[in-house]
Length: 191
Image (cartoon, rainbow, N blue to C red; front, side, top):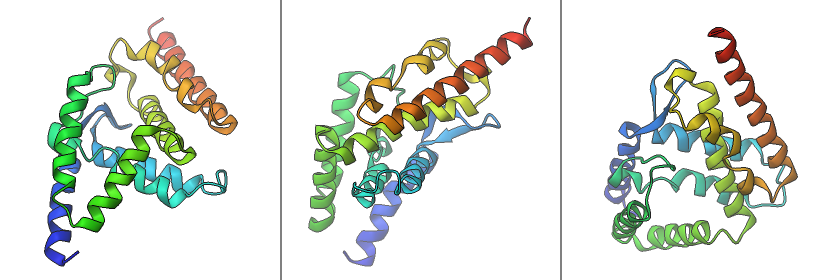
């Protein structure tokens, strides 16, 4: 890859810094897709010892590229995203990836294929971290920014995704407790 190709990739990826997500930060600022991707990559890094039998560098790469399609479509919350939305995002992403230098395109295509298949522990871990980070961020955001459906969604979302790992299942339970505590504090404040 030459320097111009490298810069062109970065210029497209930079769009994620300005692509808002559904969630807000602790201070109520709308989170960007780039911030979400950074934090799930950090989560993977922090779990290297916990999942020492996995290729965590691969998991981190998955985390970093998983939402690049949103450079072209923006972020659509999971509970609103349709199959048509997914197909459009996947198509636009695939078209862009095919314009990249051959080695980069091949590596990214292989990662996306593995991520979609969800047949490896690395792919399952990346997917679990993606979903868990969203829940953690919701628990950190002001509750008045939650949509009505998130009160129930935060109690049930991602339990199926973490089932493959006892450690992640315990993490999901801890996140649930944070959710319940946050809702209870809200209810007490309005009592």
